[in-house]
Structures are given as C-alpha cells and as structure tokens.
Length: 92
Image (cartoon, rainbow, N blue to C red; front, side, top):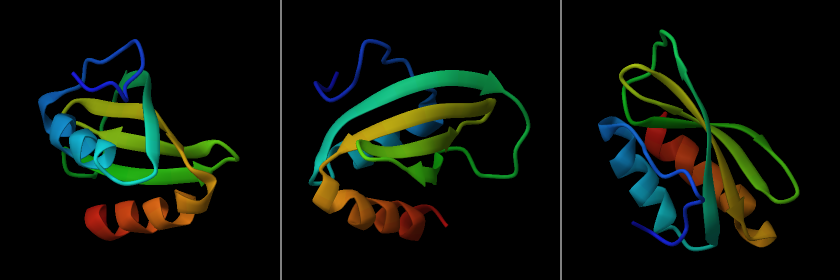
C-alpha cells in the first residue's frame, strides 16, 4: 500500500494500475478515493478523466468494469496543468 492514499484504499482491478501510475508522477501528494457508483459507461476499464481543477488539485473520474469511482488528486500548484495534460494524453 502506498502512503499517498487516504483511509479508503480499495480499488477495482482495472483501476489499480492507473492509480499506481498516477501516484508515481512528480508533484502528486495524495490521492483520495471518493464514492464508487455502479453504472454503465463508454470508457474502457482503468481509464481516468479530469473533471475540473481546484486550488488544491484535480477532481478525476476513474472508470472500472462495473462503474465510476470519483477521485481527488492533491498536487503541487505548479504541477497541476502538467498532470492534467499527462492524464488526458495517456487516457484519451
């Protein structure tokens, strides 16, 4: 288990590799897992998408085989745009 995750750490098999890649990016301080919602979607399992940027970091959606997990990425302010473009480039 990584020290960059919050209290809740369980992820689906498809998202573990993507979140692990995200944890190893420079400037990432913490990844907070939010609600997991069972629903249909068109994205492939393991895909991440940036929803919006805030002062503290980025709101993300993580797509698994069974639904969507909301994530919050706490990062350095000077790396926020760089991280958002890296996520969009890798998962688009």
